[in-house]
Image (cartoon, rainbow, N blue to C red; front, top):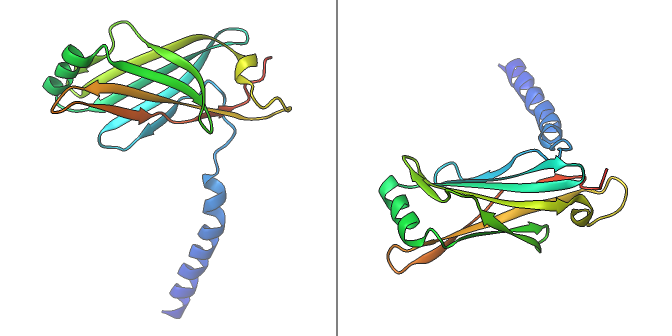
Length: 167
């Protein structure tokens, strides 16, 4: 019995030393998808694409889980009241985002919103100009929910972190 406790205790001690190092995120590309979600009500994601050298487009998607009828009412009544802003951490405003054609929309899983900002210069996004410096960006997406007394619902995407220096 004592030997098994010793083995389990040793395994737990090793896991305590190894796991925190394994959880540290690796350096990511600026084009990686960054999502924030609560596993129940929403999923909000941000990613950048580079259509031409040193020019980035920011893409955002928000999926809010709700009954399709409820989502359709939001689209019909308040659909024009959808907005998003791109920020650099810790909260420096960078740009407003435009709603993509056909968005917002209602579907079987709820409300779907897509937004984009095009033509962002890597030079403008490279706030920390030191060699290899990392920048972090996130988006806050909001829509007006006209149900009841009406309220703005705001969701934050995951954070994209990487080297935005011009190439």
